[in-house]
Length: 466
Image (cartoon, rainbow, N blue to C red):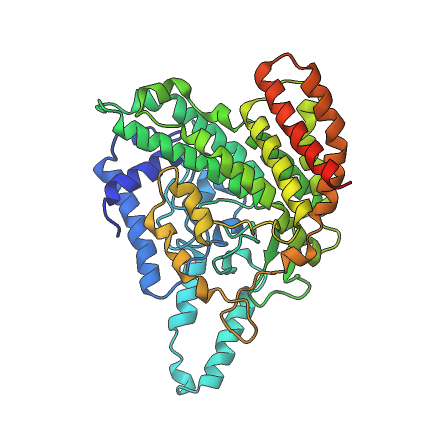
């Protein structure tokens, strides 16, 4: 159990459940709630002591509707495994009654894994071949049942069902519910947190809210180019790799594009003026949101290799172009994030056309991943140490042949497959007259300078190519 556990458990539980649970709406947990949360944490640690690995696919075994059902959650918990990494029911809404809010009970996957790992077959006389046959039969009986699916941690976020701290099998629906909760909590933060004269506690909770907003964004973004991967002995007819349907990928991409452009609306500027002087956490996250979107094409490329009918690179660029430049094409004013996205888009376009391989997209990573992703959230306050430990084990995530522990997730040589320069160059040519016209016609001095800068960069680049 990590240091300062009471503060960490309060922060996690408050941000996840304060909208639905009035008992959490204070500056610290009551003894009853603290010991309930501590029990859930110790249960997870005990599972690791028994040799069970984190199984972040377990929460995808239940639907969002099931997790909104009091009878279902009381009988089945929040996930098929207590080692899933989602300790609280952040889908529970204000006014919901009787829902289980803490994932403190072992799930069906945990019992199954312990049975598989520790079952002693006395009648087999220690014959390993006969024991292996019995164990395979045990696995075959569970094939096709999502509650017993296991998926290893991802170094690169390929499978949208294997995410830390997600719930349910529909990230978009889950995002809608959680965003309502985060808005409600943020609106009442000052009312609920008393005896905080220096705003230290409110500052920590406000940071946690910003981190949750970013995590919601990442969980939905994982659908774009997502490939569901199955390692278990699957039932006949079940594909090992299954790409998220094109329509769902596009819906998710349009959602995250809109969220990115309007992300600053989640900031509470009045509250920020009463907290420690700092650049808003929501403003700090804009750069990471922007980079996430630009690098997302790596996932689109890989998914298209698995299934040629997947959301394509051309469709990705068409939707991205419209989202980034839609306001400019329509003559509407731009907000801060739109200007940032446009500037980055032009810079990335020029860099990619000049040197496609050097500007190839970085793999979009998840929490249990290399340092790049961890740095993003550490910048706005850090992560609990338990989410960081896998970053030091990258050598174990080998993709080489002959390694029995090699990743099950599909990989590809993205720089070789990436033809983004074709789309970027075409869009630069289309944007040149638009930017020059907007630079000449706009009367807003900040916006004029923005368009003049972009028009200059594009013209200099295209003229040099003649």
